[in-house]
Image 1 (cartoon, each protein chain N blue to C red):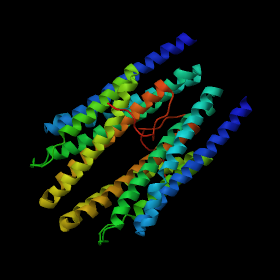
Image 2: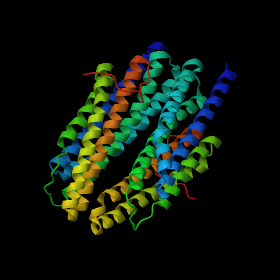
Image 3: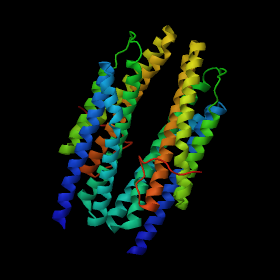
Image 4: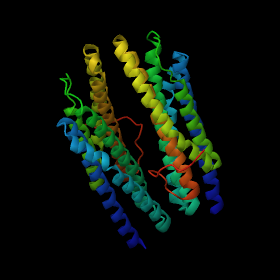
Length: 222
Length: 222
C-alpha cells in the first residue's frame, strides 16, 4: 500500500512540474509576443489555454483520488495539499498569461508609440520568480522559495512606478489612451503573476517545514 | 471517532460561514465608503484585514488537522477540500475589499467630479453574487450556486462597459486621469470578486455533486 502511495505521489509530482513548465512557457510566450510585437505568438497563447484548464482538473482529481484511496498523513498529506493549492495558482497564472497575450495582441494591431517606460525588466523579474518557485517545488528548496518571496515587493514597486509613468504619458498624450491602458493592464497582470509565484513559494515552505508563513513578515536576507 | 469527525466538520462549517460573512461585510463597507464618500468606513476596512488573514490560517490549519486525524473519505473529504479552496477565495476577496477601500479613500480625499458612469449597479450585483455563493455553501444549494455562476458574464460585461465609458471620460477630461483610473481600478476589483464568488459556487457544486465543473460551459437556465 505505502509503495503504491509513493508511486502515486511521484506521478503527481511529475504532473505538477509538467503543468508548471507549461504555464511558464505561456507566460514566456505572452511576454515575448509583447516585446517583439509577434501576433502569431500571442495567438498561440490564446488558443492553448484549454490544455492548462484540463491539466488543472486532472491534477485535482488525482489529488482527491490519492486522498480517498490512501488517506496519507504527515509529509505525504502536506504534499497533496500543497499540490492542490499550487495547481490552482498555476491555472490562474495560465489565465493571466492569456490576459497578457490579449492585451499584447491589441497592441500589435495598433501603431507602436514611443513610451517612456520599459516593461522588459519587470517581465524578466516575474518570469524568474515563477521559474524559481517551480524549481523550489521540484527540489523542495526552502531557501529558493524564501528568495522568491522576498522579490514580490520589488515587483509591486515596479508596478507602481509603471503606473506613475503611464499617468504622466496619459497627460502628455491623451490620444493614445487605449494603448497606454493596455500597457498598464499588462503591468497589473505581471504583478498578479508575481503574487501567485509567491503563493507557490509559500506552499513549498509549508510543505517542507510544516509551517504556514502566509501573512507573516519576510525575514529572509539575501 | 466518526462522531468526533462530524463535530469537527460542523465546527469547521461554522468557521467558514463566519469568515464568509466577515468578508461580505468588508466588501459591503468598502463599496458603501465609495458610494457615500465615507472616509471612516474606508479606514475601517483598511485596518481590519489582519483578522481575515488570521481566520484563513486558522481554517486551513483546522482542515489539515481533520485530514490528518480522521482521514475522512467521500462527502466528508470533499467538504474539507471545498473548505480549503473556499477559504483561499474568501481571503483573496478580503484583499480585494481592502484594495477597493484604498482606491475609495484616495477618491474621498479628492474633489468629486461628475462621471458619466455609475458603479452602483455593478457593486450590488457583485455583492449579491458573493452573498448567494455563501448561502449556497450554508444550504448546500446547487441551484443557487448555478445561478451565481451564470451571473459572472454579466459582471464581465459591466466591467467592459465601465472601461469604455471611462476611456471616453479620459479623452474628454484628461485633467482627472488619477480620479478616473482609481474608478477603473475599483471596477476591476469588483470583477475579480465576482470571479471568486463564481469559484465558491463551483466548489459548492463539486461538494454536492462530486463533479468538477470548472472550465465547462454554463448550461443552467434561470
